[in-house]
Image (cartoon, rainbow, N blue to C red; front, side, top):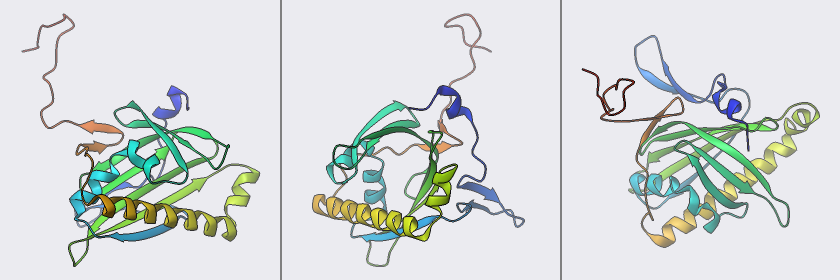
Length: 206
């Protein structure tokens, strides 16, 4: 897992929100070259989004995710691997809009990665799920990852995992749970924040 300091480092150009000259707030895309895959699922957007937020269910359909542990409200630890090989790393959710969008960044130092997933309604009442991921390894590994072959392998893996999610969710027909909070800049947004309190325990200010 990453050190606590890593969680505080800002990642430039993370997928998030930007306000254009016309005053309209829009999400900005991942910088540099990224891998992108889309799959259509025969369930409504709300159902698809709700199930995606159930990270601990990923090992039930994924071929590479073996475990997900909640560390903090916006941080999870993922164990992935093939065969006997295992790797554990922390991920922070930096932006999350219910039924629309989720962006994350890896907290590991090398290699690092960031990604986003969008949910869009389709005509027959289904959902188009688009995942974009950017790997950012350093040194010699960075040169290797920029090769087209590695990009194709990553895209193939992402497509396979999305198809597994599609079969899993369509087989259930409904979500197995949901987390419908909003996250901005790595912080959960509360609809009714608590009033500020004085330094004296249990004494509210004002």
